[in-house]
Image (cartoon, rainbow, N blue to C red; front, side):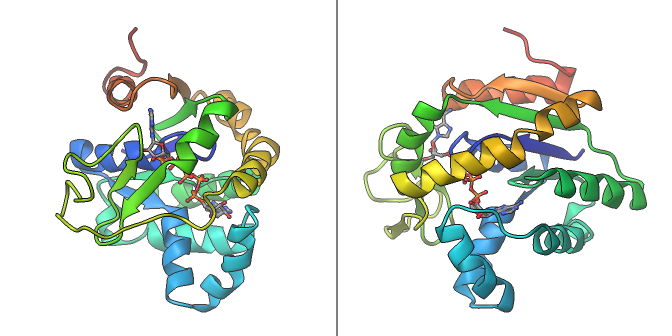
Length: 220
Ligand code: AP5
């Protein structure tokens, strides 16, 4: 099974993708994480992407399409993957359709996580993650069980993303509405789009997504 989680910055794509990885034996493909790893390693792509990401703009379609084309052919993707952060433009969506057709693979679900813009700034400004294993947390909505200790690996080192500041979030939201939101009618026309209430609590959003995966829609 292959699926896309589509939604604005802070909608909860990464949070839900990590849960689905375990529940459904799928691989999370986060283009944001891939780019941050490239920046960290100072690779050529990382050097090109760094300032673009810090400005809250989108990295070029050519780079992103090549990155995903290589990644989805790796053996761990055979059972299926969750795209988190890709596609973000119509060109990326069309390229993905072609890649999947070449691989005789299907896109089973595109799940829109709908959240009002005003909520997103709070979510993003409170976000932090474990520096060791990447587990995601929030100052209010998703605290570690023991303060300053990662639930997943026990590390006490945490970090915050450079682009998680109010000014950049506003620009990332602008990019979402201008360049990514047009993918909603694109996938709706293909009959693949289902919406969940991304404003609900984290467990409830997981329940709605699992319901879509199991039955094709979510039950209130
Ligand atoms: P990327 O890393 O993809 O960032 P994003 O899309 O802005 O999404 P986020 O990671 O900020 O949010 P999320 O939806 O995953 O939310 P999360 O689960 O963490 O991209 C970063 C940059 O890379 C882009 O700006 C761009 O420059 C570049 N890039 C990446 N892909 C690209 C592409 N395809 N093309 C071009 N450029 C690309 O949740 C947020 C917080 O809220 C967390 O603290 C969480 O605990 C909390 N939370 C989650 N769900 C809930 C809930 N239901 N209730 C309460 N709190 C919640």
